[in-house]
Length: 333
Image (tube, rainbow, N blue to C red; front, side, top):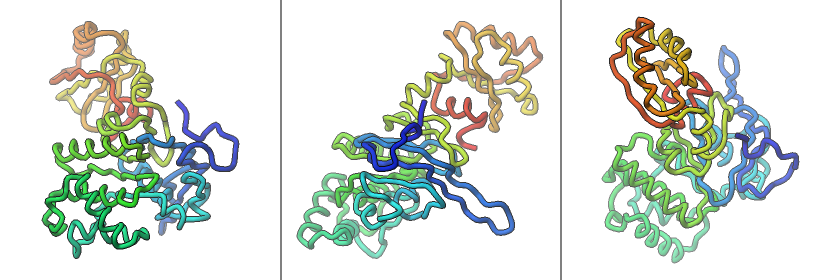
């Protein structure tokens, strides 16, 4: 597993449509030590792919997007979008990108159609071209019947769909989606996944940040797992999950919450267990090689150690399992 730009030696732009070299952001802190949000980031994103930054809140994902989209000035390092140096030429960089931030930036004084029309005008479209683009985009994103609606009349899912529609109206080379489904209900989340999939099918390059493992697994061709501003692993979701080295993930709940760490250590000694980790939500996650036949013996092993088990769940290894394997903590922490 390697970072996209970690092994390159050239100093100029490469075939990757997004590339960073030692990109770093340090925030000063009043009365305390400085906070390093992103630390020597080496990253390469291929044209036409959906690339995911997966990690818990505070991992550095949003700061990374902020630096790549010119909203955050790096402390040091370099970044390119295509052949444009983001730091040296932020104006040119802005022309290449569409951005959907975590918080809504829709203009509540404008209608749905007007939000699209004036976005086109802002990006230099003539009045006729902006009208046509707004009409076409409404149809493409199935929002035509809401053209004259006020923003406050939209559901959360519709508003987020409009944010994505506005971001791609001027046909950017790169689309940045920062936690695009945070706060959405499951149905709206799935609907937005469909929209993102359609954009990707049309050749749109997308950089997506998320802390939802299912989202990264479902949408992304490659995923970088981040924590504390650093990339811990980068590869396809399938390869990352295979790196856990187990065939089955077993989630064990014990009514003896204070003994959960001891239970994890006890189960690690069991034959076939790749790893056993106690998480902050009171679970023990056990990564087991082989089929489910060893489950009964695993439970017996716990019982022989004097541990009580109240619930067991079985699943295949997930991206969250990769993160726990790397950091020893849950993605939700």
